[in-house]
Image (cartoon, rainbow, N blue to C red; front, side, top):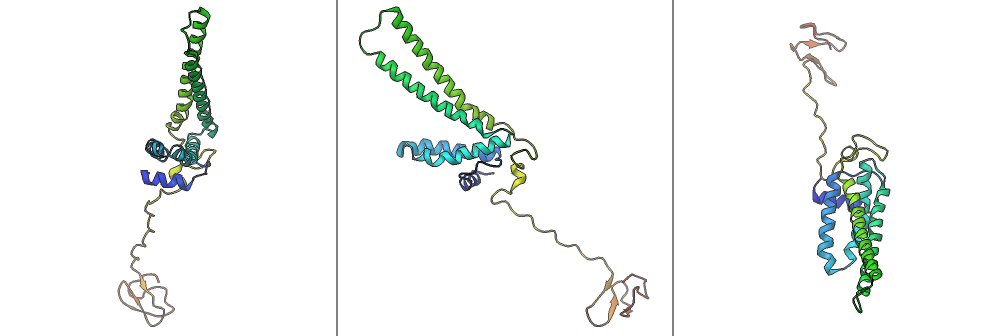
Amino acid sequence: MSLVDSIRTCFQKYFDFSGRASRPEFWWFFLCAFLAQAILGALLPGVAFLVLLSPFLAVSARRLHDTGRSAWWLLSYLAAGIGAMVLAAAAFAIAFAGEGPVPEVDSEVAGFATLLGLLLLALAAGAICGLLPLVLCALPGTAGTNRYGSEPSAAEPEPGAPVPAATAPGPEEPGIEKGAEGPRYCAQCGASLTPEANFCPGCGVAV
């Protein structure tokens, strides 16, 4: 599946969280969403995120289905968001704690070190939760049919794929030429045949 086919498919399945998706379908759209967010995010903050959020979550769910896993793994993104909020709150608290005189009491230093440790822990947890679905989506899909449907390549042809033409009938075997009307002749030897004849009187070919 090409980049254009992936984008077309993901937008056609904007709210479709059922079925399965191949790795090319997911990763091409992930690349598109990443670039769009990086370019349009500076010009239209939040707009690109809102437009791409549903198709990205939908194709991620279908990709997880292809690996035999539930789409509930996408809740890791929510955990990453919570971790980011904790990170922002901790940074805000550290910024305000830095105002005024430098703390000289051991308890204040210990409190600052604890807060910094929680900050780093929230950052690490958010990074792990954010990367976990991507790691699962990178795994190969299950062969054949699983509980979420048939294999993506077998479920439907890729957009733009040529439809196989019907097999043309081969040349007919030599036999008796049969006309709807008029006299009949043997195609093997050319002998004249009567309407009720079952065999050619000249060469014996069956009618």
